[in-house]
Image 1 (spheres, rainbow, N blue to C red):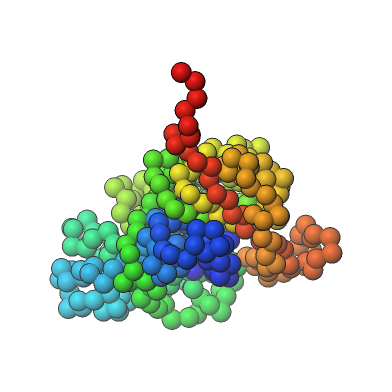
Image 2 (image 1 turned 90 degrees about the vertical axis):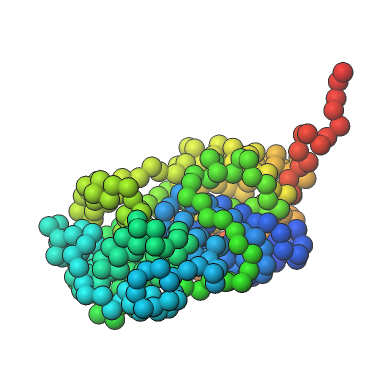
Length: 372
Ligand SMILES: C[S@@+](CC[C@H](N)C(=O)[O-])C[C@H]1O[C@@H](n2cnc3c(N)ncnc32)[C@H](O)[C@@H]1O
């Protein structure tokens, strides 16, 4: 799945940063702004127990698949012949199309005539989605089973969506990818590795009260609010197990069928520093590894201040910051007239990804007590 800020290309650097700080033995890691869960999934592959957290429901279901998926999930109570995940996905793909929520709201067959999905793709996805929801309501499938199937459906949706990278708008003519056959693939999951835990929550609400060896933090770095860019898959992820799916459908608004959402303070220039500070102070992890872009709302100096406080004064930019050259993410083609803030002396498609590593200062409770 294409996702703004996906760290697939930085996995080696993140693994090396963790290796040089915590060490190479697997421990307990939290992927706090998990997104696609690609970082958490990578560490699970290495034998770590990984917890994830994200404010998006679509991330939650993907974390469920990648962090909690095991070979023991049962698919044999569905009342169909298929008994394993691949068989169930093939069976779902063979269903006749139905007019469900995606057809109603995100295909030209709906009253708003939105062109995110062709009618055929929307109908096929709806058929699978409606059946999955019913299995879940009838307790024929467990939550992890839903995560595995839904991740496959969301990946399929992402391959045939009529967009240029994000869902902020649909394209006015059908793109070549929308003529592809819809295909439900078994998601890539480190099946045999330690089972972690998926969470759908705000990072600030989730972190306090949990302890980890390493916390990996990859917050948004600019004003782009994620729910505004992924409302179509987010709608699917919320609809599938919603108590009142009709309410979610009724809440869609505007030309693109936007879902109402609460914005994140990490995308607000005037709030991001305080939000980061609160997060770090509540983070009971021995080490933090932070990804951020040099084009982001916070500066090196601000991170220096935040991490000095987190580490009890030990953090130094010279040793605690790596600057990794990387390709700028473009959600669409390089339009004529498009403008970027280009760093002096740098090609316009090259930016530095920052990777900060800091060790937490000993908690006050383990320091010698002062006074009487
Ligand atoms: C840069 S992306 C993470 C990308 C992820 N590391 C990956 O490789 O796919 C930032 C993520 O932070 C999430 N997010 C933003 N504000 C949040 C908050 N306050 N609490 C939890 N998650 C938040 C967004 O939903 C988004 O998935």
